[in-house]
Length: 209
Image 1 (cartoon, helix red, strand yellow):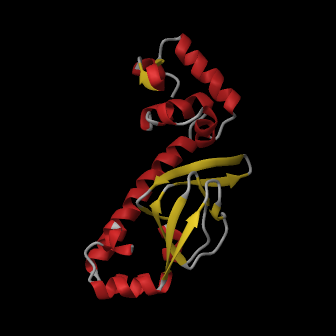
Image 2: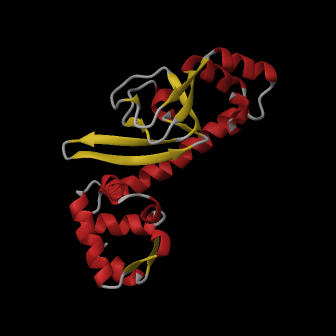
């Protein structure tokens, strides 16, 4: 099954066999915890089927950091560094996950340049996501947080429930509802049939940013 993962697609049958011997395949139901913030892990995680959420807790509550859809590698940075997970991972749907032992992966990483480049690319994408998260968290108020989300991730307003969007923004669902109502009254945003989200006045929204 590892050969179906993009970063391993160029490996030889012998290399895949070595990785298979060091991996575990697990099936999860929806709303199961894969690992908790603060847990130590000896395994890299590869999402083969389903969708997972990464959420982080602090003194102000819990907010969603990222959503990951299969196929994807996730939580590779802390495992690569050998440090605790900085966030909690929970399944949003039924999932199939391959856990690959850290030592076997690192050994092959030293041997295979293509695999190293693939990992660097994955980490670079994660850095971009973290930069967006930092921008989101640095917003001065709830209105700014929602506007930044609308600009950076407009798709979630068509696909996610209000309570899920509020969790990503780190605000109360009631606060999100008030903001959305105000924006609609001011004709800044609209929802077309089938909950298709549309920004009507970008300049007007930016004033809240």
